[in-house]
Length: 370
Ligand code: GLU
Image (tube, rainbow, N blue to C red; front, top):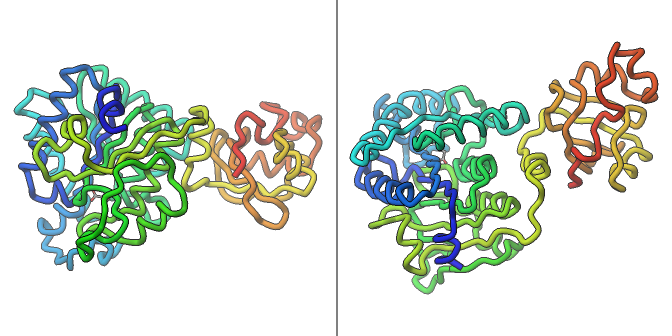
């Protein structure tokens, strides 16, 4: 599928890993050349670039043993703050040769977890693309804590692909793709070029291998490909430090290619299902649990308890009385108001709150079963 998927793509998200950007401006120049070519042919491109932490460490005199994971959260945040300007500068320089304006977009997990922020981020990226700029996205590591962090830009890039409705996600890495064994130790290892569906055997092949510089390994790339597939977006994993790292995907059979899923969920469903870290939890009784499982709305009367602090429009987890996650959905009320109407009849909502926005706590259109 490589050639058609690449040549048909109108919107591409390209992710460059730390191993590529880490002080290697020739790699940035090669990627920028390819992006300039794509843009000239009318393709929208968003670049997701890692490397802030990798570039920031030497600037602060932080010694790494090759693995960013050994750094404390404070060190990672400080290194990201010191490295992000250098990262943007490297890309600015690379794109200046093509007279292309770059735009920095730093995203935290909550941007993709809150529907309002999500729509806002989407509008901004679309506006930038409309003006012909190349958005350069990274996680806002400096304010992200471990609990609210993607941590790897693979899944962040998949989220960005969902955000802008991309049809292709390219994960450029220090490895050509997914192998059936570790190519560094096994010379017989074979590259899996075409992956129509991501099943348990594919996840098993990805193992726990982690790239030496970035935080993501093959595992997070497969998870990213899975997220992208659910939105009808194909994914290619391939080597970034080669000539024409992106354009070569069109002309040669290289990299590992993941097909988009056949049955793609609606944009709203994808957004709910792809939420990594829902901020709140609604525990429901047995009657409400079976109603939700049968595709009905969650009414206040069926709710037993509300956990967490969330706003109206945030994604929440819906658990059964035993605490098992059964669905995710968008709450029609904020946490404080949801607590006030918990266990009450729908007809009482207005008298309790002074307003009624919805008869349901979570409407069936806003529920995705797990
Ligand atoms: N956001 C991190 C950085 O720019 C990288 C995360 C990753 O390695 O994917 O340094």
